[in-house]
Every structure is written in structure tokens, then in C-alpha cells.
Length: 259
Image (cartoon, rainbow, N blue to C red; front, side, top):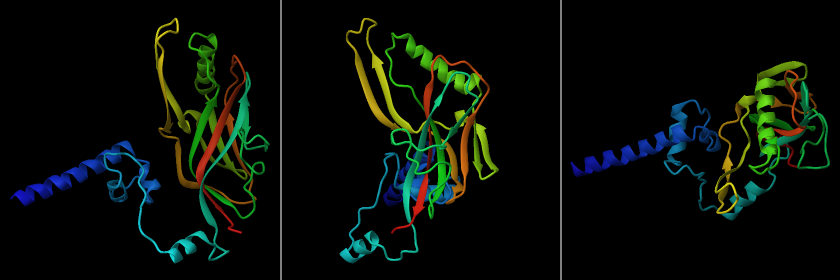
């Protein structure tokens, strides 16, 4: 009886860990190689490794030198290498904007964009999209400054007053038209601050955090080589207090030649 109770408690703990992972980290299945995050039969085996900890795990196993050599060196030049990739571009939203195209121009400043050529993927490369995110790049302001309020106002105007939406085109075919608000941020710093209005006794903390969502494409959109594509944010004209820079990022897998 004691052994039966122990077994029951063990499997109960595993089930609780899996359930926690399913509720808290539904996107983890793809990170662990599960084929369909909407299918619990694929989620449960993948999330047993996560459990209640919620931390990414990777295998630490012993391998021999020939296996490492084979993995690190080209065995077949006709097979592409696969890399996790984020393709990003940043554009200005001026007052009364109605259409802002992304990925339409290269820029030497790689903090602005990392595309190699406008509106197309370079030859022999394929970008399989899994998520799309949108960020406001407005900088930091003091809470006592009126600029802090105007930044919030402009973000609200872009999303709500202008009712911004994203059009995704491949060649001349419309692949998606969604509210821009669906493309949650890429992730990044989150902070809390407490203190007095005079500025004394200030306490603060900043952490680099993951995205809470993004617009999940799940590999349904593939950008093939030498085929034009377009990612354009559109909306109704609305007055902003200042020109605001924003970033649109495509998260996915880049397949490219190994040579």
C-alpha cells in the first residue's frame, strides 16, 4: 500500500508540473520540438522537462568526437543550415500618418534594420515565420516630465484612434490583415520604481523579460527567395505629438546555404 501511495504521489506531481507548464508556458512546446502546441498529446511529453520550474532545459549528454565533428561540419552541401532568426525593421510614424511600409529599404545602422535587401529574401534562403511582434522605440522619460504622458498618448493614438492594422503581402497576394495590437512586443526590460515625488529614497529594479505573446503564425507564412513581400502598417489619419519610431520584427527559422 505504501508503494502504491508513493507511486500515486509521484505521478500526481508529474501531472501537476505538466499542467503548470501548459497553463504558464503554452509556447514552450515549439521550443522543445513539439509539433503542435494546440495538441495536449504533444504538449505533455514536452513540458515534463519544464515542470513547475518554467526554465528552458536542454540535454547534457555524452557524445564522442566523431559525432561532434559530423554535427559541426558540412556533410552535404545541398542541404541548408537552419538558424533561429529575427528579421527586424524600424520606421517613423509621423503625425497624420496613414501608411508606414516596413522592410522597404536597407540601412547601414543595424540598430534600425538587419535586412540585406528590400522587400525580398536573398537568393537560396527561406524564412519560415512563427511570430510577429511590434515595439514602440520611444526612449525613457522622467515621470515628472510631460513627455512621459505624450508618449503614452501617441502609442494609444496609433493603436486606438488610428486603429492601426498590419497587412502582410506575398507578391500581390494578401496573406494576413490583423489589428496591430495583436502583435505584442518582442519582450525586453520591465521595471518597477517606488519613491517620493521629490526624488529621495528611490528604489528601482529592471529585468529583461520574455514576450507575453506576439502574433503567432506557427510557420504558416514562408518568405521564399527572390519573391517580393510587404509588411505595411495602415490606419486612419490621427495627430501625434511627435514623430515616433517603432520596430516590426519577424521571428522564425532561416534556411540558407551552408557554403
